[in-house]
Image 1 (spheres, rainbow, N blue to C red):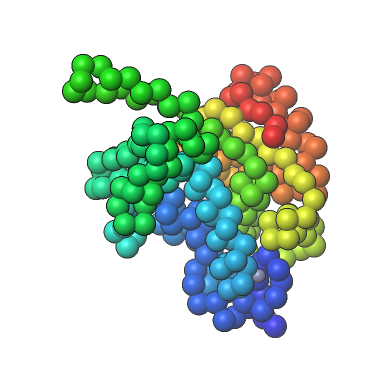
Image 2 (cartoon, helix red, strand yellow):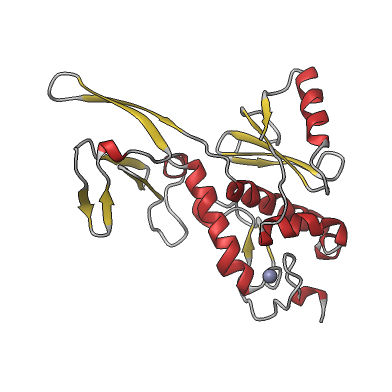
Amino acid sequence: MKIHQICIFCKNDSSENTSIEHIIPESMGCPDNFYLPRGSVCSKCNNETLSQLDNALKRFFGLLVPWYILANKKGNPATFKSSNIFAENKAGDLQIHLNIKGKPVQIKEGIRLKSLSQNQGVINNIIWQDIDGIAAKINFKQKFDMNKSVKRALHKIAFEYLCFLKGKEYVMSCEFDCVRHFVIRNLSAREILMGEKYQVGDKDGLHQFKSFWGNLFLPFVLFNISFVVSLKDSCSELKIINDKTKELGGPILNMI
Ligand SMILES: [Zn+2]
């Protein structure tokens, strides 16, 4: 099998997959040309695991997705749904539907919002205040639930970015099997640094990437949140990186 017909995740035949592989999900605003050529990933990995991980990532960023992203390439508005809230961005106009009733409400076909008391979703602590019978004020907090699927999705982005920069031959090395297995087979446990935004790229774009630190630590920003992902066997050196960042007056990051 030629190298361009091998999946970078499971190392099986990928020649049947004719789609390119977006490094950031298209629905989250993948920049132009930020993709791997077709055949980089097989259909099975793409349609099963990677698509579940993309959904976990979209859920993690919650309201930030329709807040920043107008629509996908097909022109469908960016949306977010969790428990008693549904948000969609209609051509730059963010509309948030919030069910404050004590019972579930159907707001449109296929979209049913749970009652306020069932509000266990990503958005929580909603405080509703009727100001004068006409206007209302709503405060809410969003949880960033760093679960294992989100960690795997962030490793997928970092690993694909490594492939984007260094080429497929480089990432096929068994040195990266640990990361591959974590992303696709959910094996072992890994850590990640996450924290406040800092400037990592030249441009102040929505998503910022720059070259790896020491070749295998990738700092990047998605929707104003900073991450550092390690592609080494062990993530223990992230702690050293974090201490160094603090020493240099960098952003506050947490090892999660
Ligand atoms: Zn595969």
